[in-house]
Image (cartoon, rainbow, N blue to C red; front, side, top):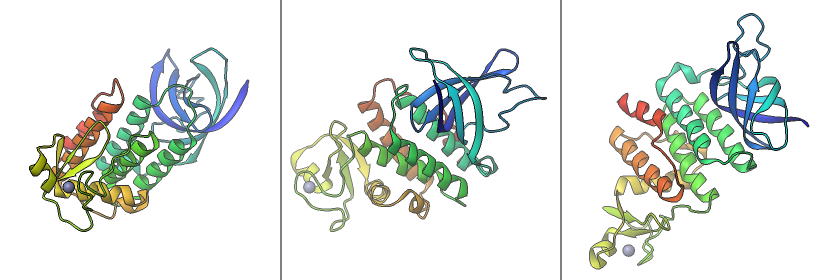
Length: 256
Ligand SMILES: [Zn+2]
């Protein structure tokens, strides 16, 4: 069956002398592996630069039932991500995003909402002048809700005090259900959970309540960013088996 769909390039691997095996996240068929014959042929590469990681392309491939590798026949760039490479924060945040999708999405499982959020996140990162890593943080907070294990931090799960009414010194996040206990209740009732500073609580609430576009409007200190990345990755690991530390994030963190 010949199919045409939009796709984000997640990963590429050399294959033979001139070809590539490309992992795509497609709008219609979810995560799909294709072989791009001649994609590394210097003289006649019909795919151009449409198979670089993070690129949003329109692809045509021969989809064989019961097979996990399909033959790519055409690929054209839809949204060039030409500014990604100019800035290390943009590049590593973008690579972390595609690395995350490759890690958590199952093969050939369609999810239009996740696809749209991924494309939108890459677009915002590519056009951002600063704080590209915030898009990653915002994406991951939003995707937890998509997956059905969202973090609920607008109000304390015990007393109902809201973040808007109170400046909590810290909170405890329960990994099992994403609920949080405020600092007052935590001291009264000896609750357990992952300790989040007041600043981290506020940032999580901001990312949850605002669009991907707006996520870049706040600046986080490196320590706040690292605390957020650590807690969100722990939460992800608790809910999805086999999640490893994202390599691109480690690279991002070593920059500052
Ligand atoms: Zn409370």
